[in-house]
View 1 (spheres, rainbow, N blue to C red):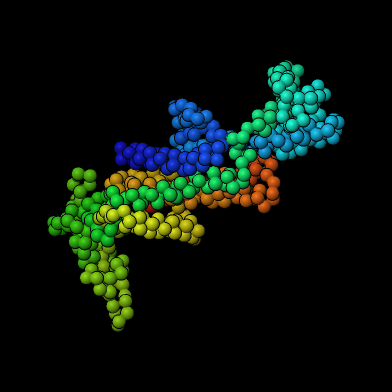
View 2 (cartoon, one colour):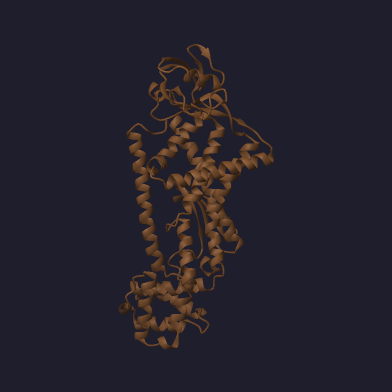
Length: 459
């Protein structure tokens, strides 16, 4: 049941974070009057249709992983709003069949449509030429004739593809709400808004925690977090346990507990543990280790010959949790800012360090973490949500096509080249990005499984 609750909490947290992230894309797209076709939580088949409001359909889908906002004109096969197709075909110097063949070959190259010019018959060619008005749009009669031809059994597959392209190009060419027709700075802001909202939401949570449930202070409790490979873990101590007494002596606060453990090197200790209302009795022997504290318990540095040294104390591999303290609004913002900067610095360092394998985790590690954090209480769950939100924002800014950072990279390339990338170029970039992302996901999943098999998973 504990694992099921942990997974349920994780899905709730991730759902909130996805909604916040996608809302960033959504609200900026609406601000720039782009047409947002759909806002969906999760992927896969539509489970619940929440309705349509201001032209946007809201859905909950079946696969509980992520979510998306579909903005019109953002697809790779939307050829610059349709303009090149109609203008290229209607140019007078393309009136000959060879010239149209050249146009069709170029369209096939740009759009990956799979058109074979040799299979486009003369009736379809003539109909398309005559349907395009001098202003580059389809005439009303021409549009209806093309739709009729599209449904005709006389039109082969290649002719149907070409007609579909022309009809789509016409609707795109006259649609002012397309993402692809907006200035590049507006498109960049729409993409950046998602990671920005994830980063801001994580920061917001840390600031609000200071005013509500409190942020961790220097004072500690007798509730513990179990550290990997310690004697406590082997003895059966779990994260979230409260060590209420040691050898029958009550340990009502964290300092009493720590001092008793530190002074008992090699001496078996009998722990009385409160685990979710149940009492558990365990025995553990502290191992001699350097004192992790920068000063002694009296607040003075440990010195030898006038130089600071690490004293040897007994450790069992537990870390006491901090007492949470509330602050006023200004103090909460200051502490929230410090905590956000600290976590983001640690995250970036861990991702680009040589110990990245030990520092990163995927869905399995996240589920284990959620299961453990629920034992520690609501405050730790909120803190975990803040960390996940910051992680989502930073990871999405990686310059990998498919991720938001990759989209920004392609926009930068477009700006440098002073022309839009063709759909084929975008497809190729996305294939590379998908391959890189698949490798990262495979590595992270393998790492999670290997860590679990080795007994090093979060407990």
